[in-house]
Image: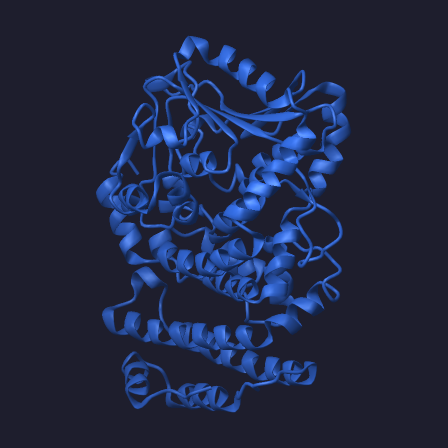
Length: 469
């Protein structure tokens, strides 16, 4: 690795870094030279050298007070150290990602979810990803007060997705049913209903109804919703009695919408601003809940060269009131959207300061690139009766006719049999978004979403556009 420049040395010294610490950091950096053709022996030796860099950098960061209390000189010095550590981690991960994933997954034979993978990597290669303890410590802080320990998780996953075999394997792993879904399956079959907290699932004939139920936050999504929604999705897909899934919001308790169904308010911006939304939320949501709606559950056999073997079912969405941000993203992977008169959807990514999931890749397929730019970059809202919205919404009905419209759509979808529906979903998806295209998108998404999530501009955007926070 390249050592510290003279300018960087001066900046760190000006912030109070002792010469001995600077010399140690410099020595550790120069000792790591990554090979062009890595082997397991290289990995073992270089992991030790990289660990010295991480420790030396952490020691320097420990010299200064927490982020909100640093003066300008200390803040600049801390950014220098964090930038060097990030570059080191990225170079190491890019070089060794295949060998690391092979070790963690037993040669691509053991399925590991993304949120577990990063912690297993943290144990095997200390410093490459943060530990649970380090992430938990930062979770207690407001977003503006965080140094961004989670960035290393997202960066590492970006390299996983950039590697074809590793990336496709992780996508396949995330399409396996959750253990808690398999445990709950018999109870759901027996009782026909489960309350999962921020999500509920109920079987009504051949329909598996998944209800958003984060009522306090107008069905916004956050760390409390991501696994309940994925569990409910699993149960719809695993239940042989169910032929079609339905997504719908539960009636609200909020005074402004009391008794009214709301589809989704998108990302929980309150949790985001207060530092309660993890960076892994974005990745787990896209690979789990949303991708299972789109691709179904993967077979236990991983074969990246073969056509997808998935258990999938058609989905209907009942869009009532609004589908903001993440709610709109969900519509893009749904087979049939029924909208309530007067409802709307939008993707206020500009006002939030983040990437709206996979919408930048999917939205333009429905409305065209120019309209997609207006929606994502310029905060255009689409009433469901607008010509642009009707490229996503299949029908618009009065509120009192929603249940009737759902019954009619279910009859239409299931009339030809769900086997052919699943086959045609695969065929359409192959032309529009093959797995490898999704993999490449996720490589970019992981890296750039980390940059957005911890950007000072995001805090400014939230404070300017969402004063209620």
